[in-house]
Length: 342
Ligand SMILES: NC(=O)C1=CN([C@@H]2O[C@H](COP(=O)(O)OP(=O)(O)OC[C@H]3O[C@@H](n4cnc5c(N)ncnc54)[C@H](OP(=O)(O)O)[C@@H]3O)[C@@H](O)[C@H]2O)C=CC1
Ligand SMILES: CC(=O)N[C@@H](CCC(=O)OP(=O)(O)O)C(=O)O
Image 1 (cartoon, rainbow, N blue to C red):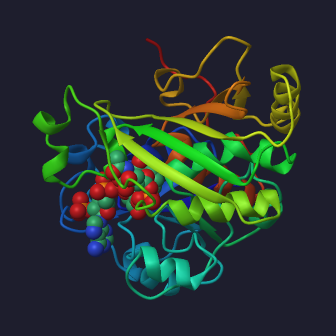
Image 2: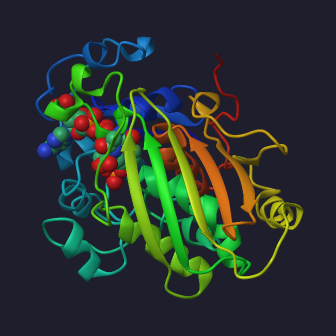
């Protein structure tokens, strides 16, 4: 069954990655491509790597230009999806790559974002317990933030098994494309190259409540999350190191078994062989989450390292994976487990 798909925000990084994936998705017919200030220009001006679509002209993002599609992806800045989504019919599958529909608690929304709270949609991280059931057949999907994707999957098995205390620390090194294309003074090449910088430190990043929401649901109790992102001079990729105090003495083999069991049947999560540690480079262009764990016996902590491509599994790939589930396609359709190296 071919589905006609519109992409709003087609000139941006997330929209570009979506189109890269949809171009090889056997069931996708690419319909309207829309933007804001870039409307009227060709896609090739913004996404030179998408040669088959280079001549397509971007339209304005309106309910009219997005009408007549089976699926609409909204890859827009936060706060711009809810109003447009409300004007698309209930039979259209709307996949929001922004944050507008991720949080369940209106108080969390008001603390971390601006504008009206628009309600929570089924959360597009299929590997979390119970998520696939909510995604099957849904007409609305909230794609996770890029940091909570890898970080939540790094800690979920340990919390679900009661292996660690519900007080976790997450540090994520991220590439610059996570910030989007629009020019920001701290993202100029001369500011970013040759340097790494923490930001949103000490509970100040808006992904903190999203982490807490995901991990508390898995643990069945409130999980406190201390999250620190670190900007690094690379275009894409997120390397997360997550750790938590062990509840009981456990050796590495037992901890590995918990993770292997949790992710055994997952098409996109790989617990790497002993001794191999994840790298962002190995995940580029794939929809993979690569994990490795260790037990720090002296500190009595479990330490898990996770690598993803922020644009693939961290946004557009996760969005396509969730779309597949919503439409009843095989979950891995149009997605790759093969990276690019070196
Ligand atoms: N980059 C990433 O790694 C991730 C991004 N996301 C989310 O995906 C969404 C898009 O991010 P990203 O692609 O990085 O951002 P970009 O800044 O690269 O792209 C933003 C896109 O939205 C369009 N746009 C901007 N303002 C409006 C508006 N008022 N109405 C309609 N379209 C508008 C832009 O069009 P124009 O060119 O005309 O300005 C552009 O196409 C965000 O919500 C982001 O949080 C989620 C996870 C990871
Ligand atoms: C480097 C960088 O700036 N990264 C972004 C991550 C954004 C993202 O991917 O998630 P959202 O969809 O929630 O915006 C940030 O920290 O805000």
